[in-house]
Amino acid sequence: MAEKNLIGELDMYREAGIKPNFSDMAKRYGKDRHTVAAYWRAEGGRPRDGRADRAGSFDAHIEEVAAKAQLPGVTKKGIREWLLHRYPGEDLAGYNAFTQFMRKNGIAVGASGGPEPHPRFETPPGLQPQFDWKESVRMANRDGELFESNVFAATPGHSRRHIFIRSGTRTTDDPVRCMYATIARLGGVPREWVTDNMSALVTVKGGRRLKVQRAYEFAKAAGFELKPCRPRSPQAKGKVESSNRFLSRLAAYQGDFDGWDDIDEIVARIEDAGNSEPNETTGLPPSALFMEEKDALLPVGNLRALEEAMGDVARVARVPATMPVSAHGEP
Image 1 (cartoon, rainbow, N blue to C red):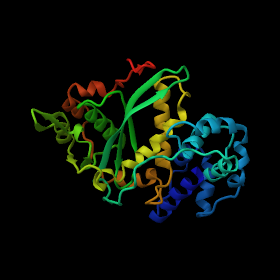
Image 2: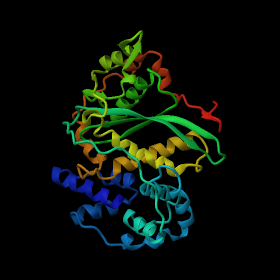
Image 3: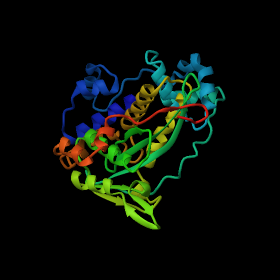
């Protein structure tokens, strides 16, 4: 899959008439820069190394794969990503070979149970990210201790680049903290932010719907507009729902981590994979398309001034407010 992503990104550079930074791409795709340069000179060609036919490269891990396949919510892609993570030096075969391996050995995973895809809803570069929460993610570590948190997901609509941010709570301040972190990581400000998660933007008090002022004040200071949308609409869910498909890969790590640092590393790895794999709609990796979208973002301005506009939330933004919970769900 990494090879396909690499070729797709190089093709995009060719179409744009831009010579890529071979060293940067080599680092992102785990290749030698000379290898990347060779792909560039090949103009879309790819060397045949037999990886697609080496389903047997997974044979040594058949018991682990069979055990992972029984975990609730796990996916084939999630298991293979876990294998690549845990055995980086084994040069394991591609996803198609892994599918053949599982079929040959009668190993099946359950249905994903994910939502039906929404109709496509395209937006120009720099205009609109969709954001939402993956709520109450519960994972047990190697000692059986349960860890529960939430993951904020933001997806700019043009590039489909995913930003994942772990959060221990979902208070009215948490969306502000996560939007601030998203802006800092994007290096710019999209103009409209949409969601159907109304509790992030609106509270109900005495039967009246009131705006969460902290969120709207932050949006004004940062220079963007918050736009609540009708629940389950493509305008609010068409892109960000794909984040749940990537975050479902967390299931493969049940019982295979120690603490919060490990979880953060896993979430970061899943985000990187999601941004490196070609999108089914665009046919290009989000990381490649984001280079075009980034130029269309509004400038961030003074981050320190933006922190001051956040008030006390700025302090929380630097420290994950998460705690492990016991097997009985107690903090």
